[in-house]
Length: 171
Image 1 (spheres, rainbow, N blue to C red):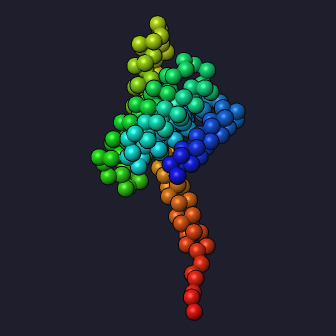
Image 2: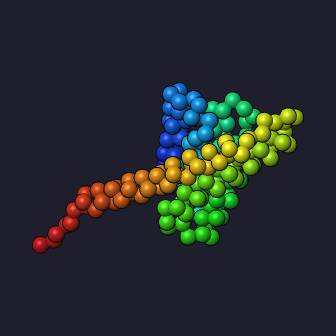
């Protein structure tokens, strides 16, 4: 089931990324659907699975970005690992905690990416603080909406399975 959820997250992130880049290129700079998928897979708190999922989603992002291959893969692995550890230690049952969780994931990813760029590139383009704040401010409500939508879909699926199940009467 976890593999199917990861595959669904990967396909949704790919579709959202291609849609954003095609229709709204300036907005695509500030919204990272792959990071939202990484943080969403880290939310249950399974550290090992989150790290694997972060690597897969990050490498898929690298394949579409055209930059250094492995940069987002490493950052995705680190973010997924740390956010899964955070989710395991914190109580994230309120909407604003979940929004803060996604905002922290954005800030952590950008810090890891900037650190890697400082190590690998001679003169890296540094991310400005307003850009970082805007990315976090956009990712927070999007992440909360993503979690709420996922819970709603899970409830609808469970209700469908309960209604579909028939009782067998032996007379």
